[in-house]
Image (cartoon, rainbow, N blue to C red; front, side):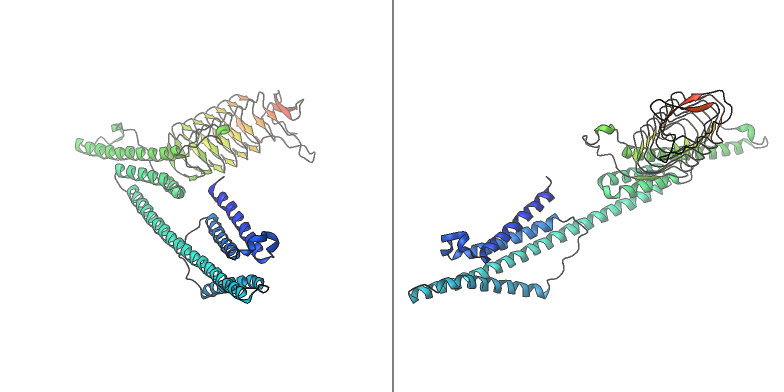
Length: 482
């Protein structure tokens, strides 16, 4: 049981005890406490105990409230003083009214007078007790104000320090020197590790840096044959020197950008098995629930394996070299709209919980979506697959759309599972195509209507014994539409 819940339960108990004590005082306590009522201090003890319990319960209730932005304490209103005076007067009056009638039948008169004097003393003591409770409340309020002011001062100092570090790191990213830019990236990473509330902002800054225009390094080999023969040796040497310096700067910028990619991947990666995440402590380096936006960025040898991203925008990004999204998890929309994969791309075992946009994407190398799970729509309209494309064992829970897609290499949907029939309208397959073992779990709508199907030439769905359908190869030319 966490501390807030413990405090809340204790506050409830103290409130109940305080109410019970007041009931004992107000109600005819002769039947409740018996002979003890003869001790005149009992009502005073009960009133003071009730006030103490109420005070403690109020303090616990205050501490169980969620912490918000702290504000300065408001000044004490005049009616607080009036209320305190009224409480003291009420304590004196109630105590006198409860105890004084008991002295009416006392004999002799001297004993009655003495008892009445004791009643007055007890009433005044009760008033003093309530006044002491008010004093305790004021002391608690003063202490709370002091704690609030101290916490606010510490919070402001920490925020100023974070702002200074953040500003300095961003300034370093704008430096013309690559080592300074690297230092700025590492400073942002360190700041994000120590200030979790600012992690999304830091990720946004790193993504914005990657979105900046960038030209990859060119082949360092000089192409003298393309230069005019009339150029002198000095001119040729000068041009070669200029080309060499420009290429060196691009290589340095490449190292900076790959460092930025590595920082993102290192803090978005969670290597815990899915079935052990609830019982296994997460790595401190893992930043959970973040969004990334690297649209139109140029990314080199990106490795986002085992990364968990809330939302991802890779629209129109250019991926150079081998790209890895193996076992990656996208809990929100993932957009690769119009992206270009210049090398091989692997999405083995990846999970797309929402929309997966690959509309107009170009895969120049081989791509692997084997064992990938698409819980939301998988949209590959007008995509281009130059190399082999593997969707073997993939699961499409929602719509899978490949309209007007072009598959130049071999394509495999073997053992894939489609909840609804996919769409391949206008798709073209140049290489071998396989749907061996692929299944469709739903062929009719809940209303009993047949779902329209558009399969590649030579493949149709046959009803399966357990329901749904299974893909079979035929000699039919054209699309099998039912």
